[in-house]
Length: 267
Length: 267
Image 1: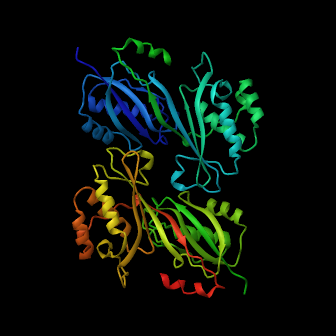
Image 2: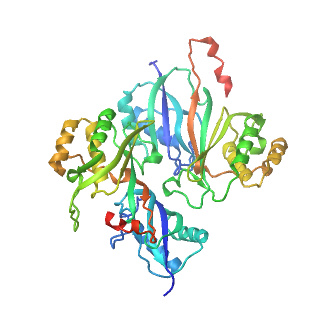
Image 3: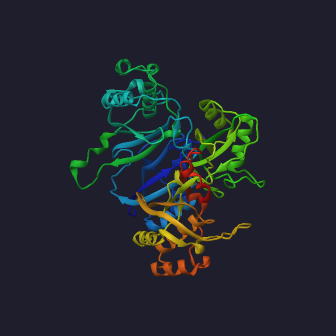
């Protein structure tokens, strides 16, 4: 048996034309495009493990994914070649070798998402693919207070959409950070960090924060809503195109170190 | 005769699909699209004076343009209506009434342009329409020194392309600012400010700065090049899509104040 190497890619993509990260027969996906390009380069079928299964239309600046291969390509040439094969909307920004045990889906301590929205009368045209334009005044102070209430460990069932063939043993999750940053020109950047998210949870949190900004949900109602665990009480799902997977925080995995060996449980 | 009002628009556009600001029979232009939309709204033909005649493919965040009209629309409704009529790549971000004498082409103290380029192996896909990707190492310190040499008043003939039907009485211009800002991820933002620019001067300055960064032109050669006034000695014209008209600095014009009356000379 030849020696295997475990290679980790960092990937940026404009999610607009894709059905999401995950490979599907229904149309183009980021995972599918990467597998096609890797097959041409490495002349073998590889399994890719992505850190985040981003939905259709969601973008990424710092997605990570690993795969095992029996070939170890020259990294500089590899980057040029794979980007030449990929559609212009997907770019591999770095490649590195990682410990054989490292699994991008399992061995990440969390993800940072960034949601961008503007609420002025007109949107800057060059941002229309990566920012939700939702015109009308927002009570930003109320939104910031709501963010503080949402941070921490809660049962986020009211913010979880139903997905075919997927049930959660628990809908309790921990949000490490929700920060609402005011940019110039009536734009908000909302940073959301956590270890694990429920289906459409980030976009449901954003939709609810905007409802709070518009006075459609009060801070008192937000507390009740969390307790109710009722999806119909929360705000709508914010559009996919405002959301970007900004960064994945990796765990350090070292197969020689037994103290790290139970990291796989952390899914 | 009815009372005229002089209205000033601030305009943002993604220049990708246009042949530039200036109206032309050859295809879509920003000025042409604005005139079409204004004719529908105001039911009259208007002349528009834009501050900067941006080239084909160049973007804007803060272009300004004024026009005279006999109607004074409700500004809130006007913004909604005109943006509903314009192509998605053009947005009027504000409208205000200005002094009858104000002329956006003549009464501006200067313009701030922003040129964005990345030089890493791969470009972030969502920036591909507004950033020049020119991979390969750059000597940024040399570029910063060159910027200092270019600031101030010089004969910029070596940075001026020939344009049909346009000759300059003088090619002496003053650059108030060239600042090279290092962003993360192998990206530079180059801010260029000045009162008046020659044809393609900003993009020729950028092309030359990149040549300096690549060691193709030395700082000593840059000094000789300025003195030579020879366009063929300078660097190439950088691509249009990296350039954005960021802001126009307006002059205060007040028809009641005689001390301001010679501003029209400043063209």
